[in-house]
Image (cartoon, rainbow, N blue to C red; front, top):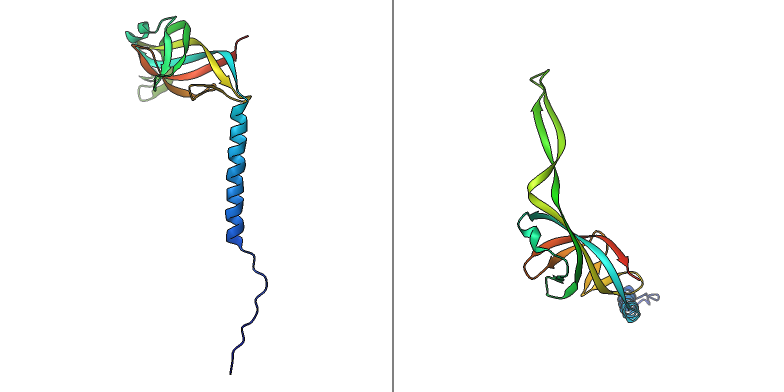
Length: 167
């Protein structure tokens, strides 16, 4: 007796479809990225960097007219102005209440540090603008971003606190 093979209905090659969709997505993403970077323009910008916890002696090394570099040595712009303020920090105040010696007063108190400064630096630079993001040397400039910035004799982690295009 001979067995006959039953014919199966049309099967959809799901794996092939998924692989094709992934490839199409990758091609579309690369085209979008390539088109986006083709339409960049160079724009003059002014941005503010904030260096926190800078030892008091080192904050004097940051001065106007110096060039700011990133950690790879790429130029990020020229310092237009510098302001060094005593670093503000909150400390927990644990005083004993005079009326009730068992009760501890726990509240945070704002103090000025006698060891550290907060250095605010305004930088003038030329940035690439693609319609959504400003970039300098591969670093994305956006308020809140942090990156390593250095001068010839100073190095620190800086946060961008303000950014505007100059006319």
